[in-house]
Length: 387
Image (tube, rainbow, N blue to C red):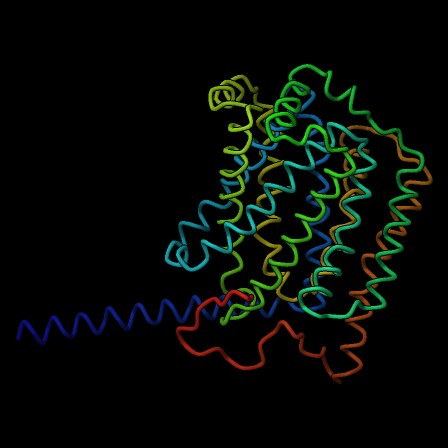
């Protein structure tokens, strides 16, 4: 009798667990249905707007005397508050996604660190032009490693984006490296980082280009990893993005501490000295403009080609200028408005062409994206990392 009752309880527990897993898979499928090749580019454009909000927020944090490395650390520390619950809820998947999350976090850490160092030696306009080249680098990666020919529409849009960025910076006044490095604690942190990482002799333009290559690698590999998942693009994208965010925060802290740009004691001292207004800006920068976009972008990457996604993210400087005008009262020039319109048109062009071509190929709806699986995955399928 006791054995039968124990077996009955065990079967009920297994049935309940199976129903729970089935409900989770159903929610993931519903979330995946909301994202397609039409809605995913729109989501990425909204995320580019949020990423652009980092520009005035980081600038306001640095105006309090916080060094750029310290501002980056606080950005990802507060972003981790969004990522931690997602990682905890999906802790069973950590061993399957740990290595790809480490890879993507390494690209992001190098990209942001090189970008900080580039800003210490070159004008901000140089870094924004380099950022706009991300789409070009992604297309080269696809051409070399995936043998995927360059799309004419994406190629033309990339040229238009570069022209828009050039027009965007034509009337701006860049901040020189000397003025940045001599500005108190900000300069000392950058000088230590440049010297201890043995890149002090590299020009700022080279550092900005290296940062762009790292960002392009992150976009390209994210798309391949998410699309290779056997459960569909949205099944592991959120926990992968959350773990990527946590690891980026950890890697950045280790990198800056090992380079001597900051110490754990200085991080604690800065945290205790910030007032409520500074903490609010840091939370907005980390949670709203970093953590939330990082969680949402990987599911969208499963439905948008990497080159198109990088073109959309090339609009980030435009949104940064708009946020700076709204939040900091910085003036807007007519050339900047015209350049912003050109950049937005070029970023949205390939997605609009793809959407309309899909509608014409499949009456009554859009054609199925190559990233969307047409056959239901087998139970127990696991994440496969592409070569």
